[in-house]
Length: 218
Image (tube, rainbow, N blue to C red; front, side, top):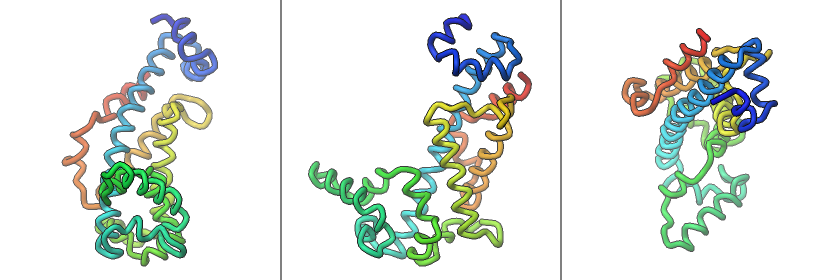
C-alpha cells in the first residue's frame, strides 16, 4: 500500500503522528502504524485474559463471603452495588425475559470498569475489606489504594486500545515502548499476585514481545 492510500484510509491527521515520529520517513511511518495495530491486537488479548481471571477471582471470593447470587443481592440501598443497581437490574431482567438467567451470565455481562470499581475505598469497605485476599501472593504492604490505582491504569490502557489510540509513543509523540512495557509488566505482576503462573496462561494468546522489539529498533 502507498502512503497516500494509507492517508486516505486512516486520515492525514492520524498518519501525521506516525510520520512525525519517524522524522518524515513514509516507509517507516507505515511500518510503525502496522506494528502499533498488531501490538494493539496482542495487548487486547493479554488484557482480556487478565480481565477474565480477575473477575472470576472476585466472583469466587464474594460467593464465599457474600453468598450465592451476590451481584443481584448487593444491588440494593447501602449494598456493595448500590450505585450499579440500575445496570444490574437491567441485565437481570433481560436474562429473565429470555429465560436464561443465571449468576454466571451476570458475571460475564459487566465491563472491566464494573470490576475495577469494586476496589474503590467505598466498595472495598462495604465488601468487608477482604477483597485483597484474591491476591495471596501480593507484595507485603500492598494497599487497596494501590491496587485500585494499578487496575485502573490497566483498564485505561485497555480503553486506549479499544478507542484505536496509538500506544507506541511517549508523551512527546516520539516512538517509545515504555508505556506498553510498563502495563505488560503490571498485568503479569497481578497475575502472579493471584497465584497464576505466566507460563500457564500467556501461551494461550498472541504475545507482544517480538513486536515490541521491532518497534524499539525501528
